[in-house]
Structure formats: structure tokens, C-alpha cells
Length: 86
Image (cartoon, rainbow, N blue to C red; front, side, top):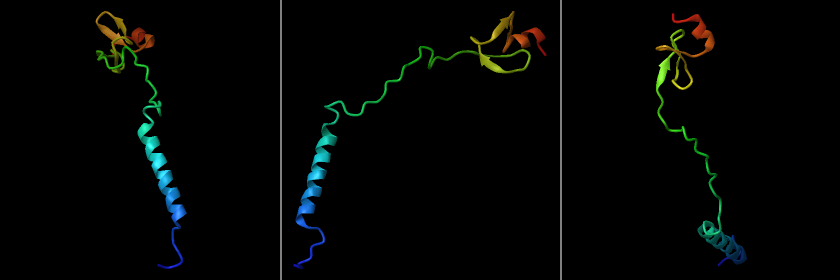
């Protein structure tokens, strides 16, 4: 053996101790409430399919719940309802 060591034994032991501590922490973190994912607030309307209607004046497609209805025609705004169909 050479008298010059690239990695002294103390440094190797320290690195192994750090690696073992990290491994233990990584394995036990779920038990101690580690990083938790934020809970997303679900909207009741999210994921529901809604009928789309076309504005009789400009042809814009929009959800039926947001449309202004006059008879059988749908409009995207009060201004387009006042202008009437094209």
C-alpha cells in the first residue's frame, strides 16, 4: 500500500454514515407526515359536460348556461341580442 490514501478511512465512514442517515430518513418520512400534496378543492361543475350553443349574431360557441336565450336563438351578449341574428 502507498502511504498516500485518496480517501482517508474517516471520510469514507462519514460518507457511509450520511448515506445511511439519508436512507433511513427517506424510508421513514411517510410515517412522520413528510411532504404532503396540497389538496385541490374540487368544483362541483368540474368534469361535467355542458351543451354548447352558437351565438345567432356572431357565431361564437359558448356554454348554454352562459348564453342569453331569446326564443330558440342564443346570444353571447345583450348587445348581440339587441342586434338580432345575422
